[in-house]
Length: 369
Image 1: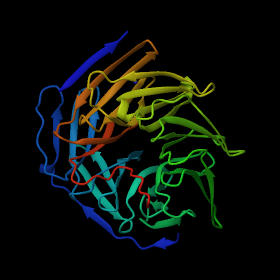
Image 2: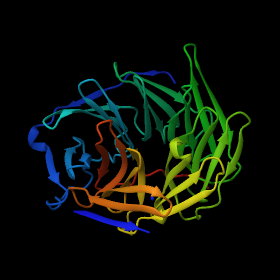
Image 3: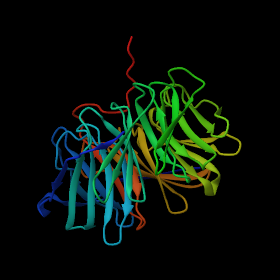
Image 4: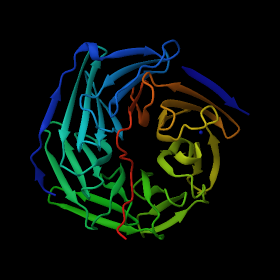
């Protein structure tokens, strides 16, 4: 169903690779405007491809139950599309190689028992990810499937949120130890640098690199968005979104000189001006009061697409100005799902990952008493 509305938001590790070639009968195409939703078994996960022009979904069922997909990245190739995602429930990185509607294959890469890969980002030839419970940053080489792990110096830091700087540095948040981390890898070795946050038990998440000079992140426990100045390690911050807002995904929009974010528990899309660090506005997703937006991506000059963990939807905010914007939401073809992340491909399609909850594998801060 479509709804619309407007307002006047470490070392080398040998890795096992699991290959799955799905039968075409496992694939579904659904028109979001005409077809009802289907049901899913507990723990089943899906990758969806959405055509915003036609308003239709393609559904790809992840072969292994209990994957609990969390983060997604789309990497275009010459003849196919690589859709990468984390499987924190199974300690795997997943990959959907999509050529067309009837030609695709799933691959799953085992990355270490108990590691809980959570967030990922792609660069040329590699997939970087956070091992939330393993306490390391992983680099998966696409061509060979080889994995290298880089243990984080601070124990039990629970890395979450990851982004790449133009100079190749890998940035991430240490959710449990109140730090922002940087990993620099060279031909001769690697180096970590950690920046202690001026706060205690803030639950840092949602890292977004503006450039080589500034890195943004959200504090899930305070509702504050902060910016790190790399040169001197200093932090500046915005006014508070609200302690219960849970800032989740952050996205730099250099063309508009702003930072977009999802305030998951306030059901809003937020906007922060990069130069003044002021919150320009918050845009409530009034069409779906329980959306709980998580992932966020840009498509075209003025479309912000988001995934709805609470509603089992994806949505679009068409933005012209702080007083001129509109929302539209689309139910996933399978009911009862948590939609966790979303990404756009160069052809103008949206990809999202979702699953029917079996066990919870959200970013959790676990502290000993």
